[in-house]
Length: 233
Image 1 (cartoon, one colour):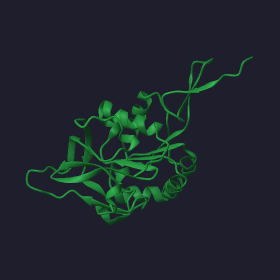
Image 2: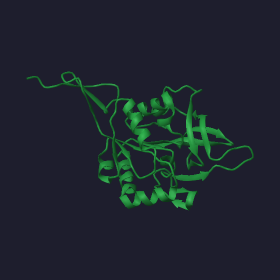
Image 3: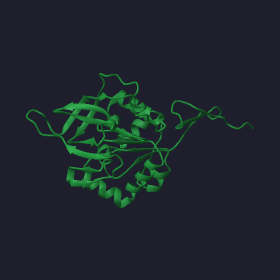
Image 4: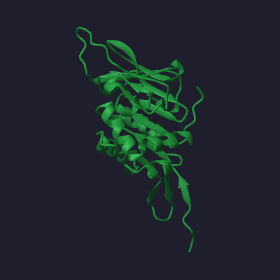
């Protein structure tokens, strides 16, 4: 009996296809669950791309993952308390230090910095910088909610192939502000120009929700699934 031959297709290191069984064998893509919402929409978007993910609150699963998605909506203080209680803060540090590709979304793009002005919260410190409140101005609605453009900078693989006119879905009152300008990968206008995509080493994060941003958001997720975690700044 012949041994099935795996052939890599579509997502490098993520999907293997058996010529004999006709079925896909998906490598582990972990979505972190820390009671911060939008898990279901992330899982559905991955499924639309043919990828079955593992939703977990277990730090050992995060450490062993091939790729980690760190979504979230809600308040920084409560989120950090849950992460610490479950040991997920240390798991994220270990995953980051070992080079695992990580994608932060919304709250997951804010609490990866050192500190958040929301609840005066010390955060994960994976990327140096602070999360700041959007300034309140006449005629500018806070929270920033709805569709908006992102002016991507540089040529990060996760944001490749996106038209300049594309719009993405936002719901937030705070934004990530990295200490180093080179870590800002995209900016958006809402009263001020603020960083809406950031990254460093094997970590990339978006203030907007790619899982709620239609085909262009799916393109970002697809790019992330193919990304090996390396980026030449």
